[in-house]
Image 1 (cartoon, rainbow, N blue to C red):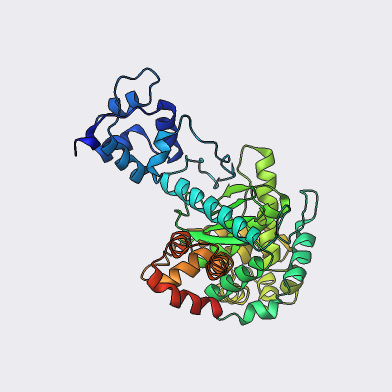
Image 2: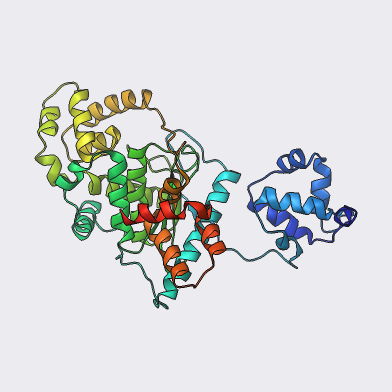
Length: 393
């Protein structure tokens, strides 16, 4: 015990970096360690006289989700910059990323780096592994969405036949994973961020908040896919209805494109033009909920997405759109899925089949250890048989 109470010389810049990168304030750390904020501040001062003990550093390593060894570095390590912050909702101000969100981004970057490395073990080195093209903001999002849908080769009839929105998400995810895009789900408060995209490895990565409603997750999936096509990483709160309130014109243009693309991809114009319920709504003075519900069920999207597409494709006026949107937003409720799942199901749900399969294949070829496997997938080895069974489905 005496050894652990010895004061340790740590670079104050490293102490500050570890706290700030975890999204924590002085008060957060002081409360966790039961010390004064002035003590935390002095640890981070260049001329500070107070030094943490080894025991304290071990507690901080746990709280910051960093290895203990990081505190003994001579300087803060270089890390990729945070993705561009595209988050905004109508009438609301962007808020700083929380500890939970920052940890989600760090975890996703680790999954991305591991997937890139494991894919490299398969012999693909030196160039982008993902099979995706590129677009620009000058492209028509309707035409772009139609072209991308042809490449994925799931028809509107296929989409309608999916048993549920959860099944639809799984099918869309598998389609994107077939392009070697990592799709990862993790817990982020949806009001803070619904998803983000990462492009700084050979394997582009889409991250979706598993805490969000399933229809919103489907929309986020293709909003972030549009970010990948544009070659712009971002942290987003995709808005299924509109996105016109950002004070940065460039960000507003990018988000508007990505929202338009996602809506056009999921509810193609040609399918809308032949939809019986869409034609009925076009001739109604008040938008019938049963028609809207049926279209949302058919396309496996939210009613907001359907409503926006009806506006864009000129089935309804802006006044009718705004009146119905206000009604939908008043009754909007978040779903909190994912609780009570078996560990094997949660593993596949979060990591996706692409990453989980890469890890299992690497273990079978003895390129990684059983301990690595458990670490990479965040699962106890006793559940691996069930994971393998789920991946074979």
